[in-house]
Length: 415
Picture 1: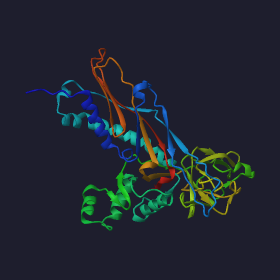
Picture 2 (picture 1 turned 90 degrees about the horizontal axis):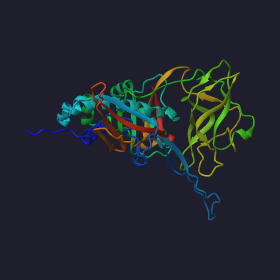
Picture 3 (picture 1 turned 180 degrees about the vertical axis):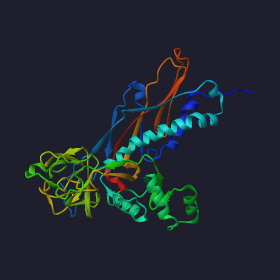
Picture 4 (picture 1 turned 60 degrees about the vertical axis):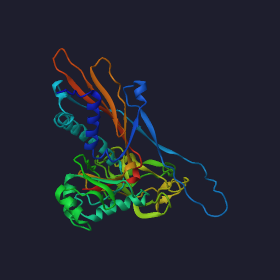
């Protein structure tokens, strides 16, 4: 009987296939692969700029608008995280069938690597300001999922390629709460057998359970009703601002990175027709802020505030808006109770987040190595005998980075 030995390319391709199948969050977001490192030999991830779609407004009448300039926005994705799983497998094990080798070695290794990559990338979800649900209450109804979908629609999110990642607790509550609701017999049977909501449910292409759903712990000043913008000089509240000072009550309290807040009277607008959605705009704090002597200095947040003076960029409207931005003393309302952890289930469009991977340098002088790209995820496998310890270690690496691409095309669902 002829003996077949698994090649480096075969093993690496199979590892890539298993990794892709085990990814939950990263499998459903935009993925971009950059092959430039294969020729340059750089070891760092480098960075790429991703364009953010332009926004325009219409005018009426025969006259041409003077505001013709196209202002392109972008976000930078840096690939700087090198994750790898390390193991040993013998020459004898390479003579197994591919199915046996996958089951015994590759599947558990890739499941671990996929879990960590997903967990890393899901840190992006706490950079999203849009949110629905009641903090402290596990989502269990169709309404909260529909509200998340409505929030995304209000910001011009396409109906296709929407996904929802939920914690195990939320998945259990939703499957129980939605059992039989407007579903065909085969979908009800699938929910009963698999314990998941699965494909094409309530406007989402897929609803999946993930243990990588992040928990956000609010700052110690959340729910403080006296928080107010402290910017008496109008020059500080310019169009596009992403920072302002905030009056507080003192006591070294904090507004945490990832806290969601609204500003009294500041409403979100639809990016296409520029009409108010009727809901307060939700912002997210992007850096930890600490109350010093009754004031938070330079609270940083996203999205940037545009009240309409900048052509095509308007994203807010309301009575408390001046021509140059929000007015002084407008009250802030931070979502959730103080210093409390809440699971952040996430509804999103595929293009809300981007995962980027790049080729790692191929080392010389090893007897077993390969690099393959599977669904825009580059993976490298290297195996080499160590004479000092008489073993043959193997490592499987992925070099990646991630970035929030279109922040308004996602929505948190508080748990």
